Structure formats: structure tokens, C-alpha cells
Length: 370
Image (tube, rainbow, N blue to C red):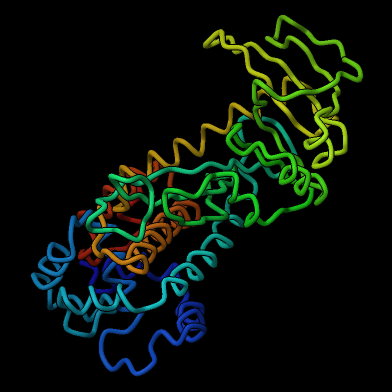
């Protein structure tokens, strides 16, 4: 029998302590704290995510039932519901956002050689958002509608490994297109998004940064065809045009030429019209790239089903953002372990095994080797 570290401790080692403490020091997270540090807060909240706890009371009850093992898990202080709740309310959520960004860098390096469904050399990102409905009386700060509150999770997903590289958490009223102002643009990369992000001034910022976008065209936009390229209609392509905008306001926002591709989806028989500033890729590749946008939809569905981000342990904005960022960190730690240990099983399977094994003292690679 292995009398070494618990499974939980081995998972937590993915986050280097020096990096974590730098994040804490950046925001004075442990200033005047004598008991229950930011690191212990992170571990308690990560435990709640890994074991699917529905509330703080549920989390604390489970931890107290295993009190003899908490010291080896890195939880040295007495854990109580009020202590964890207070920490979530007052300790800056940016601490855990910075920790997650470190993990993003680690995960992206590990998944860099993975291939996506489209054979392409550039990095491809999918951008979208998901809405998490909340109770208006409990979360009055999360403005959405007159009868309910909500938060939006705006996510840029690297399709190599489905790693979220940019996350912006807002109230439900923020329109998706505004997130383009916050988006870090990487030259040479391709950003795939739906037509909710069509704003020609913001799209021109992407083009001006030497990056590319692929999006759906709105039905009422005005353009003039400059010339057309031949297409193979057996592939579903209907046209491949180079166009320019003719409405004065939009032409001023986007003065360069655009590419308009019309495509009939063979699965749904639906006609789709794409806009892109990439003039070199084959038209069919552009259509296939847009289809990969659904990976971000699947990512949202996965994290809502497998992480605790629909029911929150606190009601303040800080507590909600802290919980979401720690949930993202747990997702990334499991993704990193999957790659480092060369595990063939899905992330879902790994999480299911970890959820019932966190207190066991065995080698992680032996537990997940099946």
C-alpha cells in the first residue's frame, strides 16, 4: 500500500507553489492572514470541483469527515463554512485568474503538436460566449433582464486540445461583440466566430493586426462584387467572391477588400455565407474552419455538466468569479495530467475516477492506467 501523497495532493502539484505564491503576493492576498491562506482556499474550492460538491456546507462536511488526511492534502487550518465563504467574498479573484493563465500556458505547450480536424498550419481559435442564469434577488449585480440575472462566460478556445486561452466574465447584458475590444490578437492566427461578432470596425482591428477572421455574414449587409473565383459545386460551394463594402459607414470602418464564400451544408442543406479576410486558403477550408466553431459550444456544454459553475457557493461578484476561475484551473490541471501521463481516457473519465479517489494514497499514473 502506498503511504505517500494522496491523489488530491498529486493533482494539486500541477500548480507550482512558487507561481501560486507570486500570484498571491501580486494582490496582497495573504496580507494579515494568520489562518486559512489563499493556497488553502484554492485547495478547498478545487476539492469541491473535483468531487462535485453542491454547496460549501457539503464541501466542509466531506472534508471534516476526513480530517486526519487534510494536513497531507495541504489544508492545515480548520475548515468551516463561514471561513471559506468569507475568503471567497474578500480575496481578489484576480489571484486565481492569474493562476489559471499560468496553467493555460503550460497546457498550450503540451497540446501544441495536436492536430485539429482541418489540416492547417496556423493556430485556430473559436470565440463564443455562454450565459449562466442566476436569481435576480440573490445576484442583483449581474444585470441581464428585468426578471432575472445572469453572467456571461466569453471564451476564446484554442482548437488544439480545446484549451481556453482567453476568458472574460461579464454580466448578462454585455453584448458579445464588445469582447472583441478586450481580445488579445495574435498575428497569423485565425479567429472563428459567429455573426453576433460582426462589427466591421472591430473586425478591421483583427485584420490590421495581421491576423485572420472567419465569420458568418448578416443577411442585410451591402457589398459590391469585385471578381469571382471558380468553385467545385460538388463540394457544396456555391460561390467564392472578392467584395468591398459600399455603405459609407461600413466602408469607412473596413476599407479593405473581403472574401465572401457561399456554401450549402450537405448535412443540413442550409446555405451559409461566410466572410473572411484570408484570401489564400481554399474556399472549402474556410467552410470547414467555421464548422470547427462548434468545438467551443461543446466546451461550454462539457464544463457545465462536469464542473460546478451553474450553482455558486457565494453571491457576490468576487465569489462568483473566484469559483469560475478555480473551476477553469481544475479543468486545465486535469488536461495537463492527461498529456503528461499519456492517458488515453477522456477528461470526463479521468474526472469521474478522481472524484471517488481523492483521499487514496496511490500513484496517480497507476490509478489512471487502464
